[in-house]
Amino acid sequence: MSTQIDALINLFAGTARLWRGTLAHRHTEPPAKMLKLYDIEACSYCRLVRETLTELDLDAMILPCPKNGTRFRGEARAVGGKTQFPLLVDDNTGTVLYESADIIDYLHRRYARGKRRSALLHPLAVLSSQAASVLMIRAGGFTGMRALPSRAPAQPLELFSFEASPFSKPVRARMCELELPYRLRNTGKGGWKDFGPPGFRDTLFKGEMRTTRNRRWLADNTGQVQVPYLIDDNTGTAMYESGDILKYLDRTYLLHKD
Image 1 (cartoon, rainbow, N blue to C red):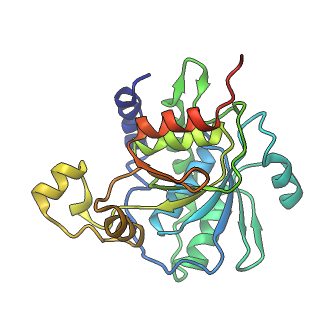
Image 2 (cartoon, one colour):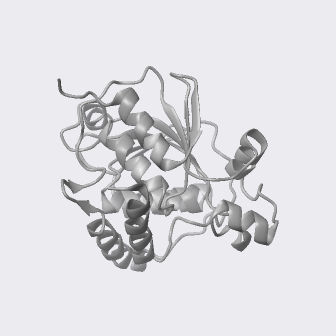
């Protein structure tokens, strides 16, 4: 499937969630120790947690646990006591949490100055997240759900993304399938002038590119703000464009059958 068609499908999925996970509503100081999230990209409950991470401008170490995966599912079970996702670990407070509603409540209480999202809305959020997941079905099932044979990187990769980005989702899905751990640098939009394709946006609005912490990093270090942006210190690679990133990940980490 072409990158453009994939992005269009992801666009519809984002619409099903009313574009939650797009704006960084609250710009919090990052915790001293990065949050850890044992995650399945295609899981509708995990999606709700990743949306909150984007909206609270929080980064996280993503430890992918796709079905049939062997790299982190055992570790997750040892940490939390069961094989269930999402699983959040916050070493800053010694917190280990299952259940998306509990994780979201914790993140708001701990990192959004006590401002909490209504628990009454969570069942509706789950339904719309499940609807978004249905749109992610491909010929082989849900993308980002099942493990593919892969090489383990010596150190985690790094991905600048935000949850609702239609071009970032295929990259996150492939990284989940390949069980590649990565530091998720949430790059949510800081305001309405951040909307639109980079060329159109920067030409029309001529706005400040440094509206959030990670957008500022991209502007200062790459001269533009666009997602996804992948950094792989294992090979000295840094690159934009989801299609190119997908080819790179397959070429570098996917184990092909002879």
